[in-house]
Amino acid sequence: MKLTVLGPGCWGLTLAWLLNDNFDDITVWGRESDLNDDLITNKHCSKPLEVQLDKRVSITSDLKSAISGADIILTVIATSGMRSVCEQLKSAGINPSTPLVNASKGLELNSLMRMSEVIKDVLPKQKVVILSGPTLAKEVLQGKPTAACVACEDMDTAEYVQKLLNVPSRFRLYANNDVIGVELGGSLKNVIAIASGFAHEMNLGDNCAGSLLTRGMAEIVRLSIQLGANPSTLYGLSGMGDLIATCSSPMSRNYTVGSMLGKGKKIDDILKELGSVAEGVKTSKAVCDLAKKLDIEVPVSSAIYEAVYTDITPQEVLSKLMNRKLKKEEKYV
Image 1: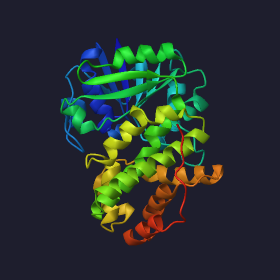
Image 2: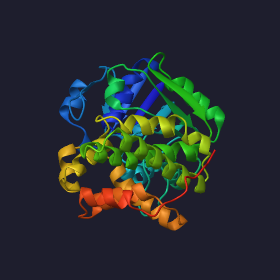
Image 3: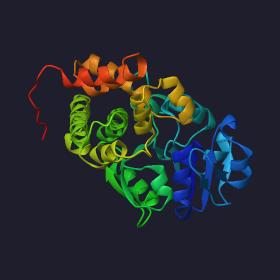
């Protein structure tokens, strides 16, 4: 059995490491500019996390050879590059029957498409599966257990991927057919995680943290239902589970971005210091664009969008959230 991982970033390498014993052959593909001698020669990465891959793992920039004979292809790339990589996969002759499992969380700017929609837009016949859940890479590398969802409209494909990617005692997978709910839960919670880091840095307390997580979840559910998600999915692993993990952990890149914003730092400096992608930054804009299109209120996401893209101060962000017009608490289930 062969596994191909597209994307030599932190989560892609972590998955290649985690799934080592599940496959006879593992290949990691990346652009030449994303590969270095340490990774190619020593199968080792030191930043942003240290990952040591098995010596038999292949590292290549040749996409055609990377996907040749693959039983499963994992896409773990920045959402901004998804369309381009899919175009390359099309040119490389990807097998439509090979499950393409996306593990990146976010929305495409301008089109506002989910990643499965982007993939299908370029590769309409491809079997697409979404992998999402509370999966902080550092804890996975430490061997700590977690659970996640694999979602596909075709449950047979979801269960096939579930069996191949499940790792006993460490990585428990649940099959789901609500692709929309699983994708949106994983994507939208990144914005709330920024808000959580922001609130923690401002020392706003545990009451505020609980309130923020709850109201953030209300936004996720409100928006996702309008886009066709099953509300119960959003209270599962890819929604509430992922939200709790990323909103409470400094290991989350999005939480870290929020913390730095709370210190008054500017986003360009933050991203340069971070040295890796934090999908919630761009997703905050996509969420606000979607909300405007659907005429839905998303006050937490809107506040984070302002914190990221304008010169608003942390104190002004807090004031905007706390002094809004009073509302009724909505019910979804």
